[in-house]
Length: 304
Image (cartoon, rainbow, N blue to C red; front, side):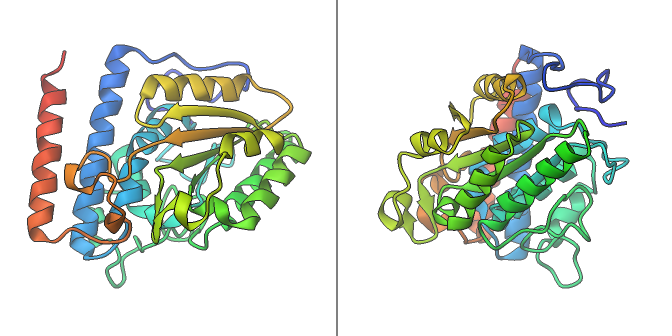
């Protein structure tokens, strides 16, 4: 049975026009705790691997928590359910965030996060759909994930299946021409079951996105390509809820959610620092990061 974790009574009958229950304060607090645990998983796994991409994983941690605990109709006990919603991590290098969310949702043991990038581990530096439960597409080469996701959405339409397809891209990634080809495809075929999300944290491996390859204004370009386009604070669950509700209400066109975030969010010395794009924390940095995250969790646990 495909369900969203926040709504155990949802039996998979949710459609484009029918949403499960809206966020309550209790649910938002639970999501904040899950996002904090996702961030802990990111820091722990990249530290254990001595490699990885913590910055962009941390900026998307709130989205990962929301998708896997509120939005997606999935079942960890049946990860290959043909009727499940699909998620494609087009910015595949942020696999530490995806893995942490999957583990938190119950697709595999949280302890396995510490095997990230190790020899013979099924959790490698980029997602592998053949080895990792819950991963719907192998990704890594930027621009290809969105193309696969658009194809999945078209396939669901062709088969008359109630399946939504979501994909997350980085703002550096959208300089790839293949991204815009996929957007043309999604708009041409009126894929209203297709939701692309762009993590606009403003930084990529070589520096600021506005300096390396300025793609602004992304909102106007997405609209011109035929997408319903929504800009949100990517660390605000209320705004996420409203954006995904708009996605479900929209017919006849795909949706683009532009998510304004902070790279390295949740760890003070990593925030807005391009150097943390692809560098793992050392022992001292790991200790400091986990102290901050444990303090944040303690504050959440104390909240009513």
